[in-house]
Image (cartoon, rainbow, N blue to C red; front, side, top):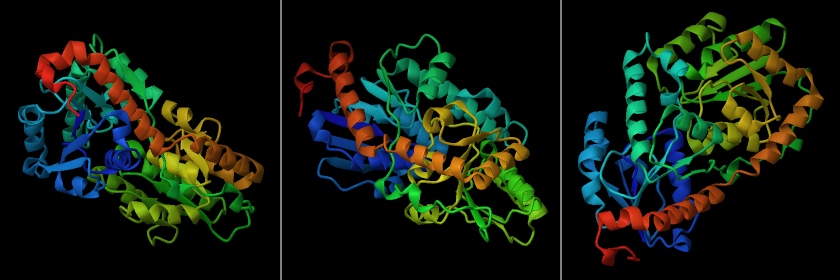
Length: 396
């Protein structure tokens, strides 16, 4: 059996991490896959593992602008995979004629009206982009043979927003955690109130729904209380208007950059060591499908102050202190609880660490390939015969 992966729009962030780990953590041959081919851009393909069963296909158009990539996805992908048995679409969008294909939803933002409205005035192009993605991913979902979701929250949200879909087969398969991030929560049990400087970190892309400026103001409020805290913000700039808003907040409360620093987009490999130096982990995003960054913080044995949204509660459960991500005072209060209450902080760290153990990239990869095999075998009578000769069905 041969699998085609359409990674035409996988280029940064969690999408790349998921694809790399998926192809690095399992043996697809165990599930009947003799060949896997990935169509993507040069940079993404360079990150994928070198395996004898993996074929990397660079498409010049996928190194270009969004319009060129989208045109290739609609016009050419179906023609290029005629000799394959099924397709997997981790980017969430495919409107071609090939069947069967399994769609993977990784982005909740197109399905969240309130979150999209944050872009309306400052970044109207992004607002239009998210609404276009809602249309395209909705059409993809209606045509897909099956779908994968990283969280039950996103599955519920998509089925609620998209009616009358033909896609009746679906599976929730959460992301995993790289073993490099696992650390012992018992190694950081000392009191924080008398520490010379308490290290707080927020790792995430810079965008409107990430609320970095509210975290900046919350840290300033802690400083006003006489608590010596330092905030390090890390992440690539996804939206320049959000980036400028964050910088204005930093300039207002800490113009000399004495205790708040933005480090840019750090290499993925540097994050485990950075987490080891951290006392409090903050996650202030108001829109997520599932967060690999939150999972990494849990695995690192950190005390977590977290945005109170459905998907974070699905993952972190009772192992964090929650806050309203749009209220700096509430963020300050959540962080202060973790600083001032040693018992609470240690309980949260240990619980989060135990919950993190349930997330494995190997498990994610095994579940994904197992589900793809199941879908292929289920849809043979309905779809495979429609696309290729009977002699091709059991190839490999």
